[in-house]
Image 1 (cartoon, rainbow, N blue to C red):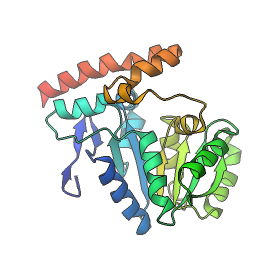
Image 2 (cartoon, helix red, strand yellow):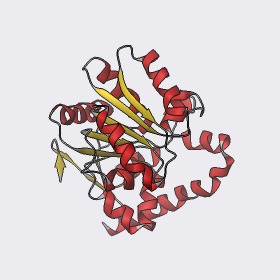
Image 3 (cartoon, rainbow, N blue to C red):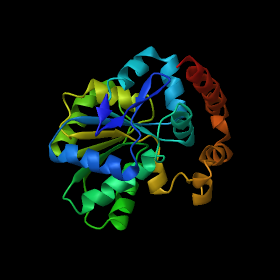
Image 4 (cartoon, rainbow, N blue to C red):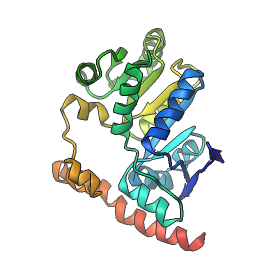
Length: 247
């Protein structure tokens, strides 16, 4: 499969498109303009490893409209496997770029997820950063199955073009896929902890650490409880090297 003549990378069976940030924003907003249903995953090494262990998640990713290279590990893997990968497209950065673009193109957003109060705080910060941005509604990510029809109604009634879902992987991807035909926003993006970062609840690594591919180390320093999850990284490197030799 090609997207805009870009060969889609096969990274451990997960199809990742090596867009730059500008290419991703342009492609996605064109889809919004045409009202084409589009689900996006920004895949880091942890997500790709999750797909190795959860067949249902791997199958979902293979049906996803666009998967972007989020994380130094994914960029490294793509290059190691012989692909041209221009840059990392992190979920948080994509979140900001889409809102910046949308502020001057009459695009409407909905923020769904995170703890109570976080989406509202993220909305307020976005409105400060991008004057004119239209965030039609917010809803926290604490809900039961019986709440879902009302959540979907709230999202659809808002008239949003873009739905940001910050429920954490893989929950956000499964939820968006399950309700794909019920949701009206053309673009649906899973964002993990991005609302927490924008709201100021979670600190992001300094720019120099991001550029040195050390953001994972900063996150581990801030959240030592992530150590178990971080063990996916060395396993990912080994699997990519094995995959390379099989290819």
